[in-house]
Length: 285
Image (cartoon, rainbow, N blue to C red; front, side):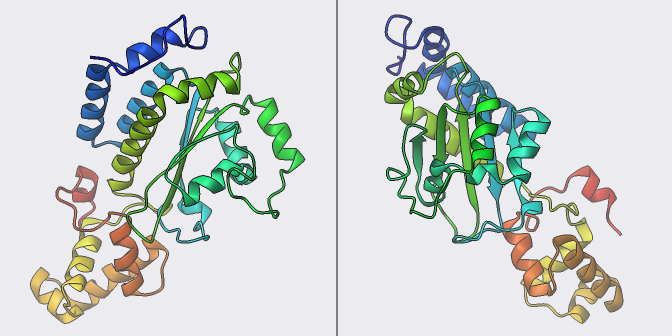
């Protein structure tokens, strides 16, 4: 059984065979199965990039800000950015904020689905405030980032924003990409959304790293309504040691209060974990 897919007679030249193979139901099922079983960030990203490469895309770019809400995207140092771009191109894209110089990026922040890069400012619902920076246009042109699509994801929380972009190969046109999306839009969206769900469900480190096992434990007892004295008795340590772990947890998470630490640790998936990693176990103190 196969999805409708490109073949060499009807699809963009050179894309047909790979797209047809990637879009067979067994191969798509195997991909999703491997994705759901993956527990490592790099493994999830590798599977995702391979899938989109087999569909005929040249690059994949994923950005996630777990601490964003509304129009506020959160602190750049907390972003998770993964891509197949070269390191210098990725760094420029992020540090120069060129990713904001895309109407479909703003569309994806507010919508779930796949937006072709053929969509203009009006199609994306972007207001008159949006004006493409000539430096960004030159950057996109120089690095073959002119054809492709952008993907937005459903929101299941008031916190967190993620966007994925897929870049077409330089020897294709936007019309070729739109032809691919005409038959594979739903598959592209499901593959991207599945990757996002898997990536965002993993423990997310801050720039200062993960909480240690002890820091997690004291925060989890705080979530149960326990005082420092209660936690000290439960864990068999002193109250000052409990306070030390809470202070270090706040430092790791970059917040001022224990309440903020617990909330941020929760949406970064750094508390209530099932199995600690070996590195976390060794960090017990």
